[in-house]
Image (tube, rainbow, N blue to C red; front, side):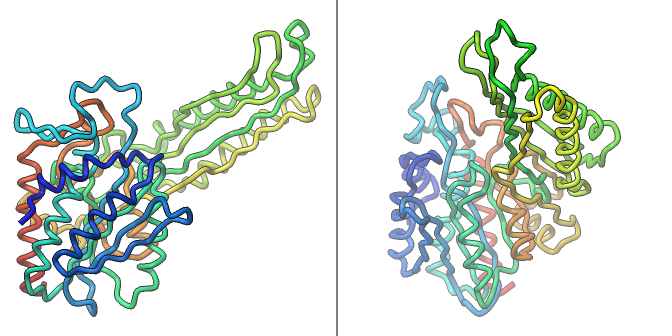
Amino acid sequence: MTSSAEILARLIAFDTVSRNPNMDLMDYVRDALAGVGVEATIIPNEEGTKANLLATIGPSDRGGVMLSGHTDVVPVDGQDWSKPPFELTEENDRYYGRGTADMKGFVACALAAGLKAARRELKTPLHLAFSYDEEIGCQGVRSMIDLLREAPVRPAMCIVGEPTSLTVATGHKGKIALRARCVGREGHSALAPLAMNALHLGADLIAELRDVQAGLRDEGAQDGDYDVPYTTVHAAKIAGGVALNIVPNLCEVDFEIRNVAEDDPQTILAEIRARAGRIVAGVADHAPEAAIEIAETFSYPGLNTSRSADVVGFVKSLTGGNATCKVAFGTEGGLFSQELDVPTVVCGPGSMMQGHKPDEYVEVSQIERCDAMLDTLLERLEAGI
């Protein structure tokens, strides 16, 4: 039988950086499942270049457990790798390669579990849900969610296998990604005060974002389960200007809000819009054409599963651990929870401390522990939990 390590080597060899297609990888997964008699549903994007995959092993008339993982990875451009990023290297009790931690390690374990499950008589089904474009805002999974929303029976619970060192994570923050388009008035730099510098509008907006962040840090909701226990507002990119002797008429600022469950991100965004309006009002007499337009580029909800939820106790019983945590990064778990009302936790092999870095790796022992967790899951499904 194909091992998780062998599957991981195949998965790593597919360059599924989010800008690239993932169909070859999905064809591999579909064919592997077909080889043991499991029919997988491929859900392609409009261009037919990328797809989600959904497969059920066992009876279809009851909920079961869904294992969710994304198949895209972040780029390696500009990173100093000492090992080939798209070839699995085993060294020092680690598996190296892009996506080993985030999160093809779990996808490999989940597929291996699916192949084993097909040879057993499950009384409760196992669902495999593999998606695309998670790394650019949980975009691809939404068509899978649409399909699951119309299904006669939804999964009873979901395990999203992002790297948590196999600790059960009950939550993550929500995120709204935004772009502010700051419009000024161009002019010759020798006459700069007669123009309206759009970069100045952008800088003033960033100052307001920093002030909003300070307020959230000092007076906002606090959740001590997170490394950063409050909602964050973060400016990541500013672009504008053409030449030194031209006052720029356009500046764009990319920023985000990552909110704890107790904070409403739309309320925070409304405050930011109000502050942007005051910036524009302050220059209206001089430059009535000035504007700051804020548009959402993507968003996903947070996950906030109760520690007392059945899914938490169940997955802890699979891992043998007692601790829970919340993770700083976003996942598709919030969408499964909020859009489908499927109780969800995050639990997978490896650590995000190794994700998105050169020489990304997952420890061999983490893959072995994940296999053991999923073997225990299969025993439970065979017994009909």
